[in-house]
Structure formats: C-alpha cells, structure tokens
Length: 180
Image 1 (cartoon, rainbow, N blue to C red):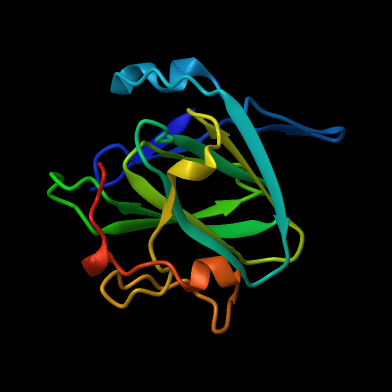
Image 2: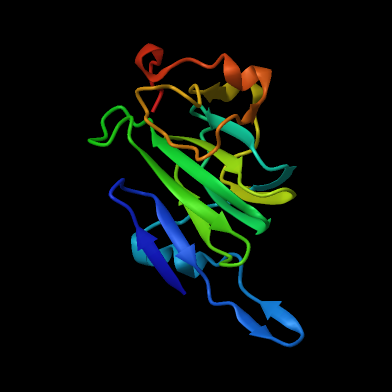
C-alpha cells in the first residue's frame, strides 16, 4: 500500500494494492495499520454513501466541535474531484486547500482529519461516493463554506456544477469564525 502526503498537514492519499485477475479484483478498502505510521488512530463510527450524476457538487461541509468529523473518502464507481479546505485557525495553511481526484479504477482513498471543510464534484455519471466518519451526523453541528468563494481559488473543473440551494448560501471564508 502506497501513500502520498500533502503540504497541508494531516491530509493523506492512500493507494491500496488492487489484486486483479480474470475474475475481477480484490482490495482492502480500510485498515487501521495504514494510519499507524502517522500516529493517527481514527475511530470510524459511521459510513455514508451518495450517488451523483456528472457535474453535481456537494460541499464544502464540516461539523463543528464537539461533533467534528474526520473522513476517509473514496469512490467505488466513477470519478470525483475531492477538495479539503484547512479551517484550523492556528494552522499555517489556514484557508488553503488540496484537491485529489478519486477514481474507481485507481481505488485511491483520501483521509481528511477534523478541522477541514470537505466537498466534491462528480466527474462522471453514477459516481458512487463512500466515506467513513469519526463522529455521527449531528444537524446542530453542521457548517460550511461557499464552494465558489473566490478567496479559496478552487478549480472544480466543471463549468456549471449542480449545487443544492443550501450550499449556494454558505458564508465565504472572510466572514467565517472558525470553531477549530
């Protein structure tokens, strides 16, 4: 199993070994052992799944403490551009983001710790997005940042994404008081 670290501390892309033959393929989609070299011991308590058509953009979302969530995300079909924005106010990379293409062919995964806003855009029809969370969904802890905030400079790679009305009215970063 290979991995890639990014310039923003805590973000990790995992590339598991995929064993393919004429019957199909096999891979591990999660192992605690992957995190041990980084001193991380995630306790995933909830799994979520969504299916999106090409151009659907979901995010940028997070949950506030004490219900903040770390996430391990992947796609099982299709392809998505996944984005994590650092919202940790004492971080030297506050307001910066990393974009990672999740691809069902590669079977790569992206780990996003607590303190980040998260979103993705489906790059293919019928993209099945799966994620493990370190805390349960709590509506009262929901938060978000506007997906197209110019100060973030995120290139989503989609001209006119389909965004929910709720995601269209999230605050921009400069009007955001980080709880992290």
